[in-house]
Image 1 (cartoon, helix red, strand yellow):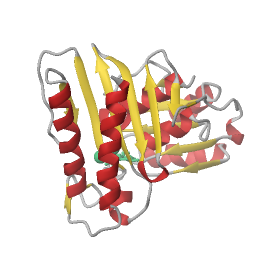
Image 2: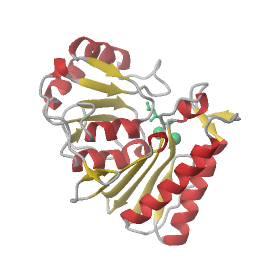
Image 3: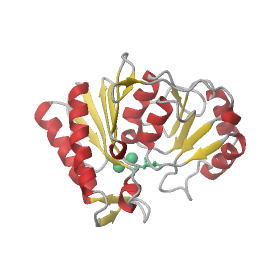
Length: 255
Ligand code: IPD
Ligand code: CA
Ligand code: CA
């Protein structure tokens, strides 16, 4: 199963790479910041056609709408291009993200960091890997020495979760906070020990399905802001190396 997920993520990644740097006609979704390009749609078609051929009974949830419902125990959760804004502006930070859920549990996840040519992958119970190299989260327990990452939802100005306040509080209490523009890559960097923590509100299942498993299989922790277990449908997403988790929770709950 994981091999098949890697295969299709790579194929989609090559398609996206070939379109990178070309002129893109963009369409807008919720507002002028929320883009979709032809490439998002082509990538989604390639991935969903592959699943329909290889696993015809499986269900599909994919960002740009070509989903498929049915009675299968399996659900593929797909972000055909995570980091579309970066892609459309020529910033080489974007990924393909594919997670496979069986009876509500994520069993496989692949994030292809296309321009760095890194395949992040995980299978439930078998660890996380970057191009075959085993990953583990950082060991730092001092928030003041932490490098954190976050992202902003497309409705950031109207979002009721005090997004700006939380961002400022982390800026004041950590070493630095980054904003890369791809939640899937943010997760992989937590798994790899580059970032000590990543939080965001109002993410979608396709942003974090693969990334959540990749973090957990690398020894990291994923919860909501209260420290409770989360599903891929949760509004709050907090992930860390585990050692700074409670300190991050405190900031998120106080701001
Ligand atoms: C977005 C990216 C970004 C995050 C946004 C997502 P998209 O996904 O993951 O980092 O901050 O909330 O919507 O739209 O590029 O697939
Ligand atoms: Ca996304
Ligand atoms: Ca996307």
